[in-house]
Amino acid sequence: MKNILVVGSAGQIGSELTLALRNIYGGDQVIAGVRKTKPSEKLVETGPCEVVDALDKEGLVSVVDKYNIDVIINMAAILSGTGEKNPMLAWDVNMNGLINILELARERKMKQVLVPSSIAVFGPTTPVDNTPQETILKPTTIYGVTKVAGELLGDYYVKKYGMDVRGLRYPGIISHETLPGGGTTDYAVAIYYEAIKNKKYTCFVNEDTRLPMMYMPDCLKATIDLMEADFDKLNYHCDYNVGAMDFTVAEMAESIKKHIPEFEISYEPDFRQDIADSWPNSVDDAPARKDWGWKPDYDLDAMTEDMLKAIEEKHKKGLI
Ligand code: SER
Image (cartoon, rainbow, N blue to C red; front, side):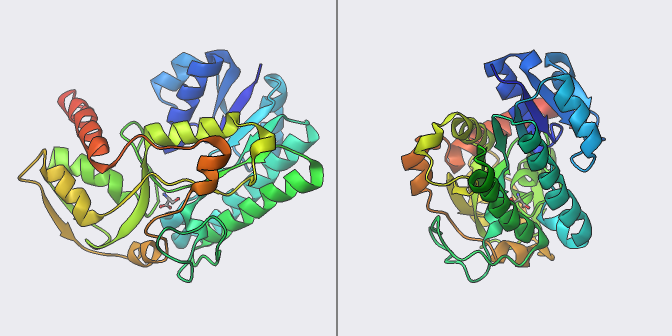
């Protein structure tokens, strides 16, 4: 039996991951840790919710002890766009929050810690196509800097203390349940909402921008499969590349036009263009496939169909 705490449960990935874990392990076994954001009804109804701030170690300790937490998942982070506007905040949340969690896990001898990473660990000097697992990590965003440091820190706790710390480098994650916030890949979610609401979208990166992306069901599968993988089979710990699909914004627009022919797209690149340009086009995830059987289910067109259907439903109900 595991008692899991998800820090950052109200976020884009945390909100759905908490529900997916509750389906597997039982509602009472998975504690939703939320900071200020009001948790969704679904989160409140399906299991315990607690106010948790990764920067407040005492608060974390009291929740961990109250529920005998032995697995902790750190989904709290300041993403690339917000990070460039406030580098100190990104450093504080992403590094001090992480070390609080790792230290607490060490002190309480927890069974497992999950510390997600990102394609933001790569930088302009990294090979852009099929970026290998082992490659140049010289990011030019503060978010990327904290993610590289986070990977190394997690690996350090594995080696130094014999702990079970795991993580994967998420590509841009696309979903329709909870909006992402402050990331560069957020355009790949906004485009679907705008396609349904206004039949047009002005994108903040140019049409040729190609990035690795993943649909939420695959993101949940990757996360849970990595958590459940046999520790002895892992050749890496906190830095697994995981690929699913990659496409340009123009290709996304074409995929949407198959369902909404009148959809129009225009481009007004802002500071996030440079960030996107510093990241890979696609990643090589051979070690994840070999070590823990990773394999994605969704491609661009399958995701588009699903996203548009779900967002149309929300629109009809007046939720967006
Ligand atoms: N989605 C993140 C961002 O754009 C990348 O991990 O910042």
